Amino acid sequence: MSDLIELPRTPVGEWFDNLVNWCTDHLSWLFDGIGTAIETSVDALTDVLTVLPPLGLTLVLAVIALVISGWRLALFTILGFALVDSMELWEASMDSLALVLVSAVVATVLSIPIGIAAARSDVASRIVRPVLDFMQTMPAFVYLIPAIFFFSIGSVPGVVATVIFAMPPGVRLTELGIRGVDPEMVEAGEAFGTPPNRILTRIQIPLAMPSIMAGVNQLIMLSLSMVVIAGMVGAGGLGGEVLEGINRVDVAKGFEGGIAVVILAIYLDRLTGALGEGPSMMRGLMRRGMGNPV
Image (cartoon, rainbow, N blue to C red; front, side, top):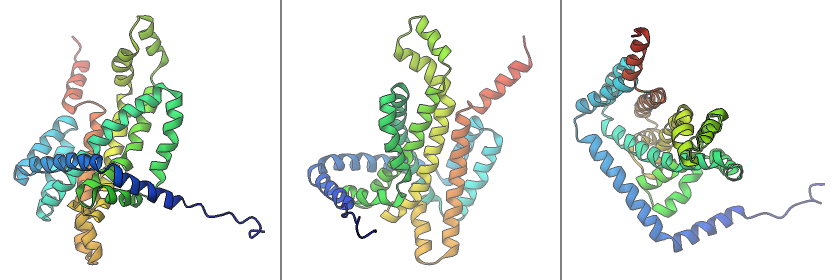
């Protein structure tokens, strides 16, 4: 029965290969510009992160954690980053942190406007949704292949593949947050004659901020996981350390690289999670104010 209904092979892979070749031949100027901008940003941020000695930057990161999240994350930051330095993985960790931050910023800048457009237009939502499904279900390694063709090897293809891989939760949670805003709040704004753009910036986005920040949090976590995979295309950092451990069957090297990734992930996760609730010191002042009414 299967022989009778045998379908001809559909060369989807060849079509995609032709598309990649066409883009490489005709849009090289665009990829060169994107590559230069990304490489410059990553190098500049890496220089900033390494201008201080490890102890100095650890204290800076701990103060940031204290202000935004609280003393527990500040204590974890000091202990965790001291462990990273003692494993001689400081430079690799800062390389990965720079890649994650650049990727997360680009992905956030792209995903939030798309999420807003999807929330305000059902047509845009129906167009964006299958694209996000495709981006989320495509194996992460596949993104690296065209990125190598467009940008050669190094940190740039790693950042580009990371941005594509990390964007979907940012778009989805932005759309979900804005659609979840109480319609009565929006109607109240419209009743006072508030323009749509001001309703968006003064009512919808502030009320949707916890969901938007949850999307940014997930986006950063996916960026970190993809940056490690990007070590396969020469992005360096902790991904390179883990990959070297695998190639040499060096359990200790691979495990230490993994521990450093976990420390970065916990720091960034708790920090961005706390940002959605407001700075820790401000929350403390608000609680004290509520407990001591005038």
